Image (cartoon, rainbow, N blue to C red; front, side, top):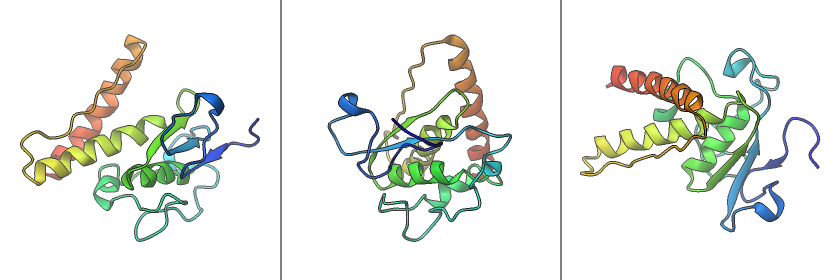
Length: 155
């Protein structure tokens, strides 16, 4: 069993036991969300925002992705999962409702789509989200639309 707010880790370590994916995965259990992403306990720790680092993920979060959520600052474990995603690792994030999981899939989806469009890719990437409840789908659409509005405003 896990103790504390975080179980597992990044870069191939997972806490899913026999249900873990067979491919190398990054597994991160996120702490509870507070009012804003940067007010979480431990948010003052160094996090992978550029250069090397990445908590073992081998990469950093692209600055263009972080610009989409500025002035908010993702929490360290969100940054760790985003860095793992940016480096090409599969990421499995397990947490309670409101734990900050959405940013970890929305930001790479929008950021990579933006990269494709800017590079002139004829068929930009597509992200498909399947949710079990209409209310959750509506919530995801609202938060994704807010992120897309930031993207539109940024050019």
